[in-house]
Length: 337
Image (cartoon, rainbow, N blue to C red; front, top):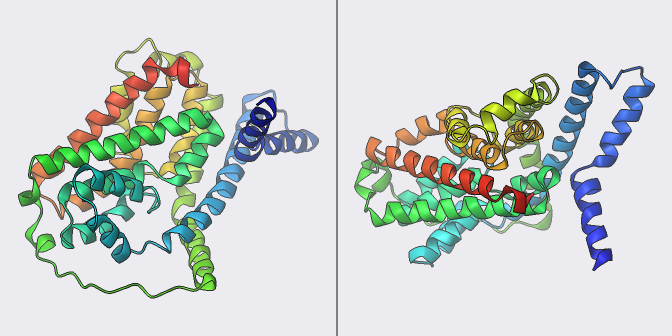
């Protein structure tokens, strides 16, 4: 048992957390004459370390996830979902969302395709909520920063929001609030071609390059903000606004996160810095969920395919669920961290 714990701790600290990289950078920067005892030196080390760590994990994760995705093109995913009914279909849709695109904007075209194909509206919304909020990439990155327990509970919470939100929308019979051109779109039933092993590797490589180009600017911004928070903003400021002293911290973090456009890879460094400065865990994760699920550009895109009443309901469900999850995380933080 002790040996297994040692191995798990090694994986968490050295492989996922890449503590070896932080130590190597510390030695290198010191050798180059950088003073790591002042704020500028600490900020530089934080920035370089997080950039390299996230990029390495990002490229590996996208390659692996893209390889998995190559077995689940939209038509095949639609057929899989079509075999299930009731809440089981919502659960399968939410789970399917974990192996699909990394941001809310890229999930919407699939949502449109699934809805046009005649899948139940609640099922498609479970997918739409889960896809940006919970993915395999976020699980691994969260493990590298907050540990496996926090990562596992975060993913479980996201899936619960996705399943509950989709189920509620289906129960309220909101299909009439989907734009007619979506409901009347013809569905061409075409099987995806069989890909060879080499084809899948090429596809995965191309996805790494394409996704890296899209998310790298957000990583730079996110890590830059994280470095600023981590080394320049006084801890008492963060603690007063997002710590135990402010019971409205979760609500504030959620509402601030909604209009921001970023993905999970650009948001995690900010969350890491906020947590290190004294922000409560649930408050930080609520911010992350709001940013990745309800970004302004994705809501604008979604408003073109569903009517205001359904859009308002979707946003309200997500915000309410995120806030509830945030307070629950804060309540049980001592047992999770």
